[in-house]
Image (cartoon, rainbow, N blue to C red; front, side, top):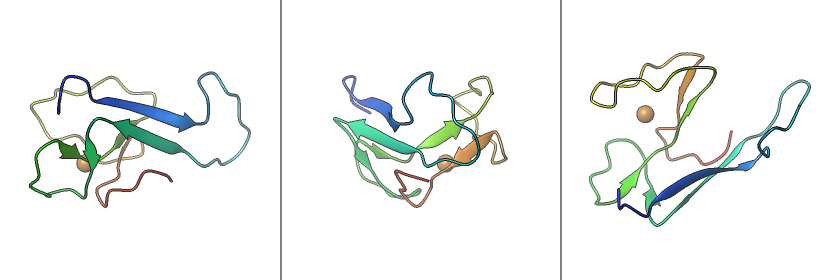
Length: 77
Ligand SMILES: [Cu+2]
């Protein structure tokens, strides 16, 4: 990814307190969102880590309730 790429959460806002389910919207600037296994420079897909430390970046990210993959290129869930 380029050095000025930025990933962010559009909604909910930082510190929001929500009861029950919610919709999350993720954003990316200066790079592109693409499905997993897409071979195109400066693209990737979102991962959402929930109450979890950052896993080693040179290993596959686990796929469980604390490590959500959006491998179809989804930007909301
Ligand atoms: Cu993934």
